[in-house]
Image 1 (cartoon, chains in turn orange, purple):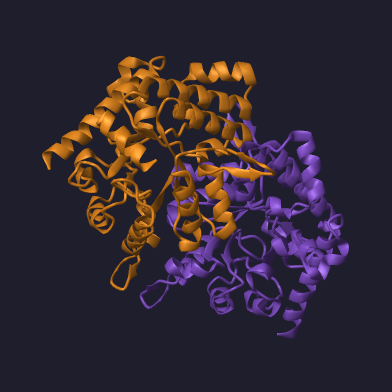
Image 2 (image 1 turned 90 degrees about the vertical axis):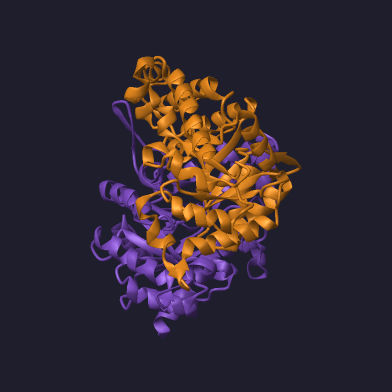
Length: 308
Length: 308
């Protein structure tokens, strides 16, 4: 699947991923109203609203982008119906040829970690049958529990040709409280980066590893260091746009080949119609606004890569 | 809810929690067969099997125990039907007066962390209505992302009178890879323990804080230190039984008042019928075997507390 991700990025010439993180506030009123008319102001109604919202955005952008990253928390908050919308979104994006990165940030140990890996990347055995639970292509994983948490994911990735992105340095202001703590004179995230590189060596695709890393756009200098520590890891970069990261901050996350990183934007794309810049599309044209925002984001990043 | 947990522990005199982590392997064949006859060898069939298994174990033990801890990964691996069984289990346990600790180990930032908090501990606003997603009483939370990940949980806990257990030192062999790294001459988990104490000061119940900690039974010496660092935090202790922890290892996790810790056992209780010791109950008597295992575990821990 890492080879598929690289192929999709080469084809679209857009190293970006659209974060399908649908807060109900982002969903235009006419979409919400239609869903609530059918299902009421219920979890089912909310789930229908975010699914229809996602579908329109995917329809409006899928030919321009290599991948999507649905954030499962935004679905989980609407309970079982919400997770039904998550599953529909995953399936629909895969039908459209997109690589689906499940932003699930799961992390546990042993058989529990294996269960999460199966839930999101694998098949589960039920009696004599093998069944598909959620079926994303990649999952994000938390490293706090050490190798016992990661190895079960790597096992499933090997069997299913799927991949993971391990949290190394997250984009939020307080990420340093734990991740920057000095261990033998250098920050903990560097040590985690070295582990990612080692885990990744065990499971290489053609050019890059099935084991990638999450490093926030908001920390470009750390991205530069981590890029060198993990040369074969794809870096998933959140924090572009709404969180403050800009194209020029991102150049160092990429390798010389122009590959090696994929930059996420969520609100900046899916709620683009709320920005003054894309105001002309109006609420009704929210998916067209998202398409324009994708084009602008891709151009911003490609320009930054060309200037370095 | 921390007051309710303490009250339940006082009433049952059993500082234990039953981990409802139903691997399909644990479910006796007759329960599986019945579920598969009705729903086929499908995700629905697996979900029905684990739900019926859980229900029997809860019926067999609920009057002896203060709390249960369903591990969501074991349900998530069976996709949407599996999560339906999780929700049914949560609801049923609450009907029986049990405190429900959702072992979800979620961790993200800002609005995403808020969405997880709402999913598991809160209510979600849909139009003019407030809806209940999963409705556990406590959730386990990963601290790797720092305060940005914890504060949204604390906000929901304050509103809903719910609680969290933050991962501090996990029970697995490789937990030290990150958690034991020396920061200014002492291990990272101590620093996380201090943060738990500080977060907990903001949200106190009558005697203990709504913010607790996870510390593995497999590391008793570290438990002793962490007990002092976080005197008001309830400690959720996994790793008893199958993972190697014994009653005598656990005394230091408790305060002088005999409170302050709750010890989890999963396999040791829910799959007790597979142990030679409880073999007399047979597969058909799996719930009675679980009841006997609960009684033995409570006695083991109370004895250890009395001996100190």
